[in-house]
Structures are given as C-alpha cells and as structure tokens.
Length: 205
Image 1 (tube, one colour):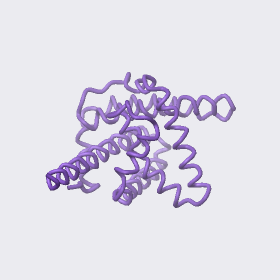
Image 2 (cartoon, rainbow, N blue to C red; image 1 turned 135 degrees about the vertical axis):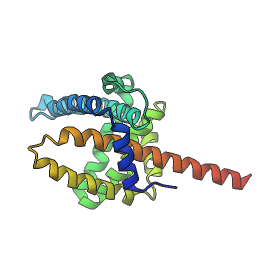
Image 3 (cartoon, rainbow, N blue to C red; image 1 turned 60 degrees about the horizontal axis):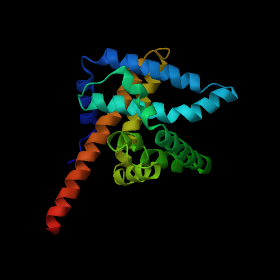
C-alpha cells in the first residue's frame, strides 16, 4: 500500500537525523557546482549541458543512499561520471521533452516533469538501461502517482517560499530534504509496483 506523503516526509526527517551535516555539506557543494554551470556566458551554458546530467545522477546516488539508510559519502556526487554517456543523454532528452511541454503550455510541462521525475533514481538501480529505457520506465512507474507527487511538490513550494524569508539560508536544508524525500518516494513506488507485479504473477499461476 502506498504511503501518505506526510509519512514519507516524516521518514525523511528520520533518515536525516544525525546525518544533516553530511547532507547539507554535500548539497552545498552540489548547489555551488550547478550554480557555476548555470553561468550567463556561452561557455557556462555548454558546461551545464555537458555536466548537469552526471551531477544529477550523482545527487540521486547520494540521496538514495541516505533514503535507504545506507553508507553515503561526498564522493557519490561524482559517481555519475562513471555513466557519463547515459546521464548526459538523459539530461538532453528530459530538457527537450519538459522544455517543449512548458513552451506549449505550463500544464504539459508539469505533467512531463512529474512523469520523468524518477529517471535518475531508476538509473541508480539499473545503470545498464539505455536513456530512453530509463525514461520510459519512469513514466510507467509514475502512472497513477503523478497527483500524489504534485501535492508533495506543492508542500516543497511552500517551504521554498519560507526559505526566501531567511535570505535563502533555509535552502541549505531544504534542497537535501527534497532530494532525499524524492528518494523515499521512489522507494515507496518501487515497492508498491513490485508487490503489484508479484500479486499479478501469483494470480496467473
């Protein structure tokens, strides 16, 4: 049975208890890198296109380790480069799909963003997948759960507005919290999907 969002948020607080220092430190480095890559110069834009995918995969590796209460380290942030080609192509494809969605209308862009939000987490567990395979798997896993994640994102948006009132300092805690909470969300959907698959298999037998 799928857990309520409030349960996932509570679980995220629990897994981060005693590990906030590590999480804040690693994501502070991540935010600095992403911010630098988002430079206004053409060279900055090119670097972002090249490196955003591997760093996003690295952030997913680190976040999922925390979400699963496994050993986590700052070095995981750079492990996405072990699968540079796949991460790079995934980033390009997602930029195009989600970007086109937002160009057409805001709603399609949001739907696409929700549908493909689990792609990097899927690659953590299945690095052998090709880019489009991971993207399609995310869409399939999110079938029936997009509104659930949308409501969670609305909670994050509210927290982000509060962080603005702290001159942005609150984002040091919010960014890792959001990433790890997404890891918990992925774990919950994954477990529920596997349970449903096993149940269907048993009925067929």
